[in-house]
Image (cartoon, rainbow, N blue to C red; front, top):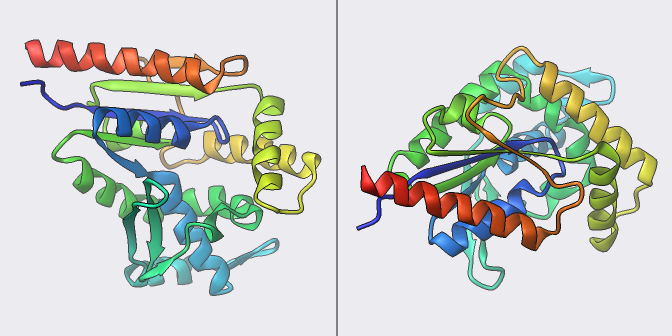
Length: 234
C-alpha cells in the first residue's frame, strides 16, 4: 500500500499555486488546504471591522479578536473544491477581491496571526495526504514535507495573469494597480520578520513564466508520484 506524503507548495503571489495545488490534490485524492485563503479571511474580518485601511492598522484589536475568528473549509460539490467560511458565512468570492489583496500581506506579517493559523494548518496535516500552498509551508508549517515546490515568475507575467483573472470576475482594476500590488506583496512577504517567504534548500524551484498550466501540472505530478513511490519503499 502506498504511503501518503505532504506536498508543500510555496512561492510568490499570483504564480498559480492554488490552481496547481487543487489539481494535484484532486488527482492524488489528497486533501487540499488553501492557506492563503485563511490569511485572506482574517484580512476580510479586519476590513469589515474597520481594523485596517490605507492609513490605519489596529494590530492590538485584531490580536484581541483572533479568538472570535473561526475559519472553515466546506466542500462545494457543484464547484468541485472547498470554499472558505468565516464564522459560518461563505466568503469565498469576497476574499478574492482586490481590496483584500491590498492588505493581506500586512495581516500575514503579524506574528500572532501566523501563530494561530500555522497551528491550525499543522493540525490538518497530521494525517498526511495533504497538499498545502502558501508562503511558509515548506519552511515553517511542514519543514519535513516529503515534497517541496517553490513557484515563481516575472512580476509582469504574474500581474498580467492576475489582471485577466480579476477582469473575468467583473472587477474594475488597472494593470498598473495590479502590478504595483504584486511588487508590494513580494516585498512585504520576503522582508517580514516572522516566517518570511524563502526558498528552502530542499525545495524544487519552478519558474512558470513560460510554462502552461498543463506543463506545470505534469511536471509536479510526476515529482509527487516519484516521492510517493520512494516514501512507500522505505
